[in-house]
Image (cartoon, rainbow, N blue to C red; front, side):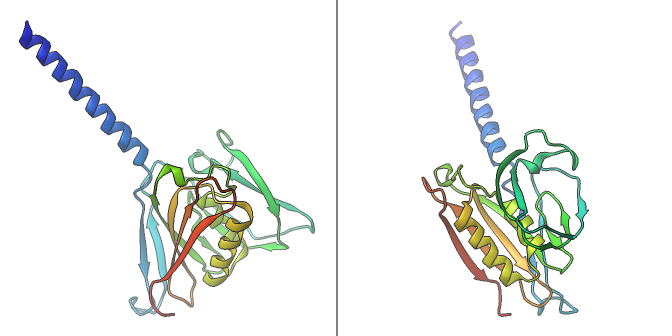
Length: 215
């Protein structure tokens, strides 16, 4: 009888430990993307390349969003929850995070889970490194994918994209976990940009820039 009880308790303990491990793995799913960067001196034709493996449970649809002109005073809506939609018209679990002033003209871009390329050959790759939950500012308006989207809509080079993302984070707050994005254009090598939230701060973010190699 004692042996049976011991076996049962051992079995329950193993099940509990396995469940805890599964829960931890579930939490980390989506934090496994890997950036891929190629500088112009490393490619055979002088091209600059950046991309990433989107290793997570994110949406699979994509769409080329056209360039557009906008009226003066128009506002641009910023959303949260767009990463897990089933099609462009799926608004389930998508919520409005806020609005920012629209610009006069926006560029066409490739609308993927993490928007990655625009008509000016500005490209962005992404890697999640998460970080402690205590550093996530839930009041921040922008998730990383929305910062990428706005940068692709408004910028035609890597330097301007970096400046814009930094300004948006400063003005409206960053609400995501730790992220590393690689930003490249047709003339410059990729630039690695790291963003992570700050605790109890609505408009503060650590923002570090690390050039991959000389331009």
